[in-house]
Length: 289
Length: 289
Image (cartoon, rainbow over the protein chains, first blue to last red):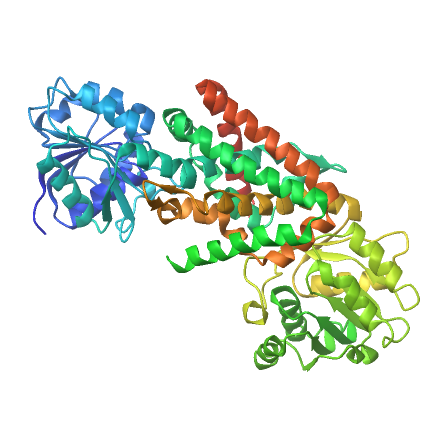
C-alpha cells in the first residue's frame, strides 16, 4: 500500500478514530500515528492495544503532523482545530469524521484558512459502542465513507483523504455537505432521537405495579439499541444538524400519525398496505447488506 | 420430565408453535404432537425438521387431542377455535400464544365454553423471523411467558400450561390480560408501529437524486429490524389491542415532540438531560439480559 501521510495526528482515539488509526497502521498507510485526547485513561488503552504509535495530550503535538483527523464528538471539532492552529505547520491537511457536515466543514474551513486544506468526511460505521477499547481493524471494511468537498477543497488533499479511507477498506462517495446532512438526518439522526424517545416514553411507566421495561423483549432492545449511544455525542449532532432534523422528524411524525389513525379507525386493509410495503423494503435492506 | 399432555395439537407450526413443539418433544412433555396448518409446504418443513410427530390439515385432527395450542396469528385464533370446536372432545385444554390477550381470551372462552378450559398465554420470544424453518429448540429458554388467567380459568389446566412452558425453559408469570395488553402495547406493539413508520417515512425520499435508504447504517437497521416482521401479523395485533396502543403511541409522540422542540430551540442542556437518562436506562437493560 502506498504511504498517504508521513505523520498523522488522530484527535479522539475512540471507536472511529481508534479503528481508523489501527487499520491505517496495519495497512501501512501512514508513517507514524499519534493519538491525541483528553482522557489519559483512554489514551493508555489506545497505546496498550497498539492503535497508535505514540500518544499526546498537548496541542503542540500538531507541530509535526502533515495530517490531522478530528475524531472527537462533532461539538468539539472546531475548538480542537483552533487549539491545533497555532502549532500546525503550513499545508497540514485537516479532515474529520463527524456525522454532520455543512456547518462543521464551514467552521473548520474558517478556522484552518491560513493553515492548510480541509476535507470533510464521514464514515458510516458507528455503533453504540465507544472508546479505544471498542476499536476494530475491520470497522470500515466494505462500509461507506462520504467525503463532502466544497469549492474551496484542495484536490490533492481530497485525493489523499480518499486514499486513506479506501486503504482501510471503505467505499468512498463524494457529495455536497448539505445533501449529506439531509440524508443522514433521515436515516440516522432522526432515528436516533426516535430510539431515545422510545426509551424515555416507557422509562417510568408502571402497570399494576409492574415496570413495563421489565417486559421488553428482543424487538424493543433492537429498536432502541442506538439509544445507548453517548448522549453528548447525539446532543451535538442534533443541534449541529437541527435544520435538517426538524423536517425529517416532521415527516416521521406524519407517518406515525397516519398509522395511529388507521389503528384507531380499525382500517385493516389500509394498515396492512402500509405495514406490508415497509416490511418488504426493510427485508430488501437486509438482503443488500 | 413429567408428561403434561398425551396428545397436543399445535395449530400454526411457525417460529413460536414450531419451537414449542420441538422443545416439548425433546423434553418429553407430550406423548404425541400433531402439527396443524394451512400451508402444506410449511407443514412439510415441520415434519422434515422433526418439530412434530404428525401433521394434519383438517380440523378433525382436534378429535384426539387433550390440548390445543393456537399458534397462528392473533387474528386467526378465534376462527381456528371455532373450526376445532365441533370435533374436540370434552375437557380439551385450549391455550394460545398471542401477543394480545384481553379480547382474544374473552373470545376464546366464548367459543370454547361448552368444550373445555381456556388458558391465555404469551411467550415473549418473537423475532422478525417466521415459519417452521425458523423454529429453535432453545427459543424459550430463560424467556418470559405470561399467562393471563381469568376468573373462569380452570386451575388444573392453568397448572398444565404452566408446566408446559416451564418444561421448555420459560419463566412463567401470571397477570391480568388487561395489564398484559397495556404493558405489551408500550414495549412491543407501539415500538413495532414506530419501526414500520421509520421505514415508511424514508421509503421514497430522494436527496439530489440519491435514495436515502442506500445510506442506512447499522443503527437504522437495528432500529427497524422488527419492521421486517409479517405485516398481517402486526395488522392483527394492532387492531386487537388498539385500545391500549392508542395511549402508548400518544405517550411516545409527546416525548418525541418534546425532543423536537429541544432540538429546534437549541437547548443543549435540556436535550442532553433527556438523552443521558434514556442512554443510562437502555444500557441497564442490556446488562440485565
